[in-house]
Length: 426
Ligand SMILES: *Cc1c(COP(=O)(O)O)cnc(C)c1O
Ligand SMILES: [Zn+2]
Image (cartoon, rainbow, N blue to C red; front, side, top):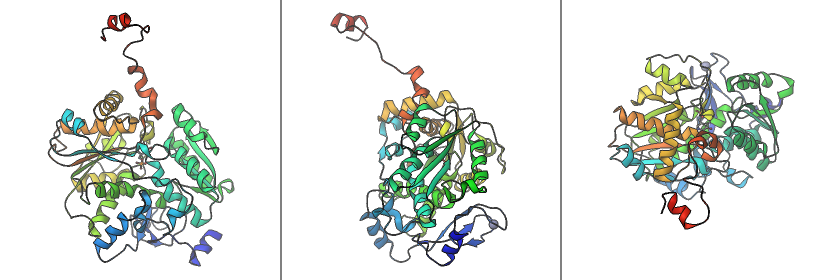
């Protein structure tokens, strides 16, 4: 109650964020920690008072900003002085021109990999959490929480540690060892739930309504509208790194579908603001076959997503009932893109292909996007002559088990030259 009263007295400063707005019916709400519309239960998102006027001035302001997501603070729900607060300063990751991968895949246009594995906790999740932390601060939450497929737990643990907040995060009990360790090391509470991600998420929704969860900011539940906006920075960075140019085609991984919908939102904002030339772009969604509810709906021409029970090595994308799935379908159809999926074997092959051609070791989610890119090119769905950006959203060291059975030393030999020659290496 006190949170709502505080907001109504006008003390919440989240920069250009003006209100929450229902994606279904357009109903507006003040900036509070809510995530669903009272009228129609639709998801809420941030509506902005975006900067108006000279695009050149805004471009210069952005370019003069820090080399992190905060250079885009004028377009995010964060206070203007955000960069001065203790935070992990994510973003500013490389856009790698991938000529050798392009040659392997038969791409004649520009192929780029947006490599987000270099973020502070080695996945794109640091971007969304950075925005959620600002909302948590604004609303006076002292405990940061989430339901996670692994990467988010680490990002929340680290960001909370830096910000001086308590954290308590929830994960499926059977995640990769590296992800569990990389989340627990930050010293917050980490709870394994006996069930799938969708069970974890349901549990968190119950906790929010219970006195036990009072005063908690769940970054991807009650802070979801704020959190989700962090994904926009991926698209801003890609366009700025292309010289303030829209790519023609983007291949984006889908877990809940939030990242993909916000990339589209960001591209439309850049066009509206006059920061890039208005031209068509296509967005392609990528899933693992073992958790492909959005891809199945797309291929069957359906508008409704049928939930599935995930079974794939791409655990960071293993959300069987993706909240933003219907919006992903809309965006893929509106932009002329598609949603496709690849098998676990194709994911592993794609991880190795990217590593061997570009020196980038991606986690399984990156294997999904590269694998889907390869498949869409082979099927003639992606145009090989255009400028294409493929997202790698996480670091390969977190999912070593995916490649270790088929990757190892070429030989193990005695330290002498005969042995070297005998092994056929000399
Ligand atoms: C969470 C995650 C995504 C995308 O998540 P959305 O819920 O679709 O926004 C992509 N890649 C990795 C590695 C992730 O951890
Ligand atoms: Zn509504």
